[in-house]
Image (tube, rainbow, N blue to C red; front, top):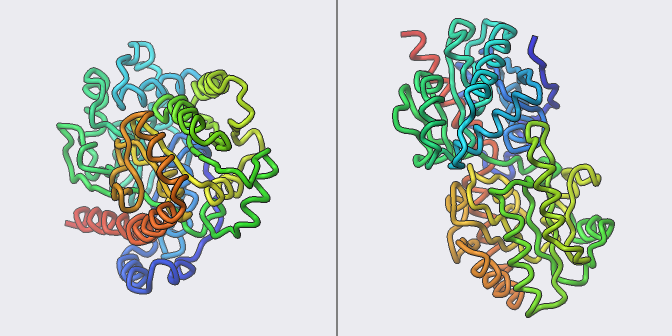
Length: 414
C-alpha cells in the first residue's frame, strides 16, 4: 500500500467573507453532481514545497463538498529522489539529463508504486514528474486520469522532455500553471489553472503587528530597523545569493537594513542542504543576515510573522513554476519585488501592485525606492492584496478542479 496522508478538516463556508458568496455557491453547484466520486491525489512528498502545501487545503475542501478524496505519497529512496531532483532541474532548463541508470531507477520505482496502487478511483490526479509513469503502467486503476505539472517546463532540456513526454502526453486531462509551460506534443485536454493559497491557513491568516514583531524578535531581528525578507526553498533557481548581493547594495545607502532568508527543507530535495550551506558561506558572517529554516523552529506562523513584519518582500527567482511564496507575500499587504520569470508576472502588475526585476541591481534599486518612500510601499501592498483576493485564493482553485472533474465524468459516461 502507498502511504496515505492524514489531513485536517476544513469548511468551504468559512471562506465566504473573503471570497464572496457568488463563488462559494458556484462551487457547491459544480460539486453536487460529483458527490461520492472517489478521487486520488498522488504525490512525491507530504511536506516541504508548494504541492504538499496546496493539498493540505485542497483535499479537505474537496471532502467538504462531498467527494471521497484520498492523498497518497509514493515510496522512494535516496537514489530515486536524486534522479527526480535532476529531472526537475533538467525540465526547468538545466543542461544535465539523467543517466541511463537514473532513468531506469525512475522507471523501476514507478513500476513498484503502480503495483502498490489500489484501484477503483473515479479520478486519479498525479502530481509532477516523480510518479508520472503510473497512468501508462496501470490505466485500469482509475476511470479518469489527470497529470498536474507544478514546474516551469517552458525551456526544458530537450533530451529530458523527449524521454518524459511518452509518459505524460496521453493523460486524458493535464493541468499547467500558464500556457507557456505546455510542452509540444501534449495530447488530451490541456487546462491552464494557476495555483492558489489558503487565506485561513496559519501561514496566511491575519497577524497583529505586535505579534509579528514579537516572533521576529525571537530570531534576533531588530524590529525597529528595516527588514528585507525572501521566503523560499534553498535552491539555485530561487537565487538567495543574488538576494544577498542586492541587500549589500541597499546597505551601502541604508546601513541599518537587515535581511532574512527563510526557507523549508523538503524530504525530496537532497541538494537543499548543500545550497543552504553555500548561502551561509555567501553571507560571510554578516550579523544582519538571518538565514533560517524549519530546523530552526521556523514553521507557518514564523513565516507569516516575517512576511507581515517586513518592509520589503522579495522572490528573486531566475526560474519559477508559479511561486506560491509570492502569493503568500502579497496577501500580507506588504510591498513585493519578484523575478520577471515563470508565474511571477501573473501575480504582479509591475509598478502597480509590486515590481518585476531582471537583475541584482534593479532588485536593489526597487528595494531602495520602497524603503525611502513608505507611502509607496503601502500603496503597492494594498493593490497587491486585492489582486490576490480576486485571483489566487483556494476556493477559485477548487472550482477549477471541479470543472475538470465534471468534464472527465461526462467524457467517461459517453
